[in-house]
Image 1 (tube, rainbow, N blue to C red):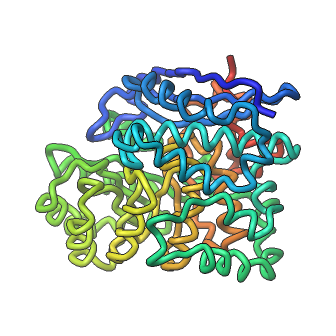
Image 2 (cartoon, rainbow, N blue to C red):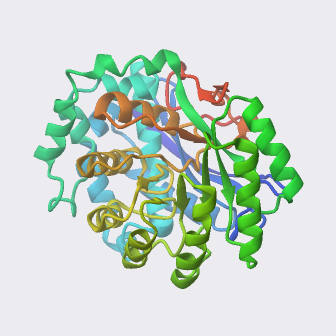
Length: 407
């Protein structure tokens, strides 16, 4: 039984140009942490990701949501978590502050993720194993599928999970082989050209075969020059992605994305405003067969549904520390599976939580195991930092969701 709840405003200045992009020049990587304390001494840890200022507001909102869990057992909570999450998201006064976006949605992510962590710790297994051990019916019971019914009902979601049950064994080899990673840290926006070049060499030496460059400069020629540096160092066989972090207007994106064709990007990420579904559709049609990767700043399942309906997202980057936690992540994964679009998460959690979720996506839902973003800058702050060896995530064995932070 949950006896008490607490929150923690955890901020980690990283400096040295790390984490910089075209919008966020000097980020302070931060977590709004929810802690659920049960009567056995276990603590469920949930994270939502911010860049510093306002993190305390997310903590305050998370405390509001988490209070309703006191006095309940985690098994009771998770047995029908989808309905509970729906009720919390629709709390009338907090809903006005969203709905389903911004501070209140981040707070719900923190609380939801703490629930999943405590559930895995209560059952004594890593989160990925908990997810795989659940029956299809139990998985669906944790989801709020409201506003998706025109594309994904509970019955159709259940069918997707059930259809992939018989073939799981063919995909379980990834638990031993590990899940491929890609290196985001080769090309932060504030790194100079020489540093980008050296970082690419270092990433290749570490075993990575995919890497990402931040673009969105005022001088488009800088972006093109740096993109060609990465391609030159990485070689033609490597997957190279570019990420504009929403910096371009649609006319700018239409121009520069055509020019980026020459370096053959695997995807172009967040080229313009994340709410502009129609703009992304226009861009996707104009630059095909180049693909767009979208979702880092998409706050909820409804907007993801719209992107999938518009058929303009080549990759869905849903982030469980931005949408309403693990449950909404799974809802978006199921929706993406229906549309045949791969899920490659953005990792605001630094890959700690998502290393579990992509294993379930692959084994449980049949998503392709393309790769998972790797950002190493907060490793020292986690009790069980993710292990990436030879460019590959090693399957976590500790119980829970790997989100426990050091004091």
